[in-house]
Image (tube, rainbow, N blue to C red; front, side):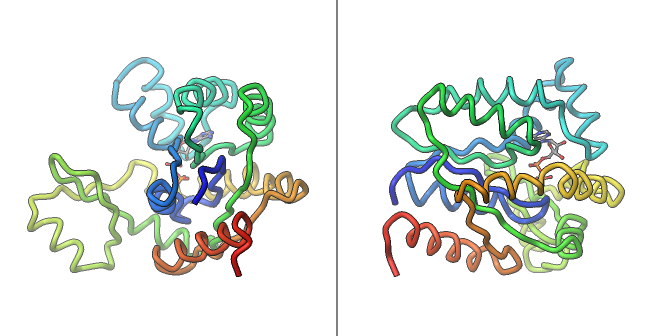
Length: 224
Ligand code: ADP
């Protein structure tokens, strides 16, 4: 598949990072996951990291001015010959407008917005049961507490089961409220420009990946 500049959009728990990893393999695309990058900033323990940690743990959005500045910096590190996938940005109208300006300035047109859709109920079920299995020297793996086999395997491999700070019930509710109030309205913003593809995210990761791939093929390769 040709390199694309795209946004992966969806509520918390929709599986954006899982699908971003899939698309990274499918085409010459580098992902920018804002949540992941912010968590790295938190881990540095810097003053900025401490500020960001508080905002994230409360389930609120990091300030637009800061996010726009960070995104500019991250985007400029992506080589021009590969596409870019934005996972977690833009989340507000101000961010979407800032992104437009930046993409225009660097001549990297936005080609498609894939929006994963999921009910609040299913998002809450996924996030409240989400755990990270961390095994030294290996990439983190995400699992759900209902998956006993995955839990056992993680423990048997000497892995540590970690709950994300913002996956606690009250924070989940706040994150969904932020999404519904500030981020979901962007669907209309991109829909009006005919950039939007809606994908039902209430399936297995594999099913969702297949649906995305098929939709992209149809749109860009004219496949049936
Ligand atoms: P999710 O999409 O599942 O909520 P992420 O890992 O993408 O999780 O983001 C976690 C948190 O990082 C958000 O709740 C928010 O506090 C912060 N964040 C990430 N991206 C942005 C952004 N574009 N603007 C503001 N805050 C952001």
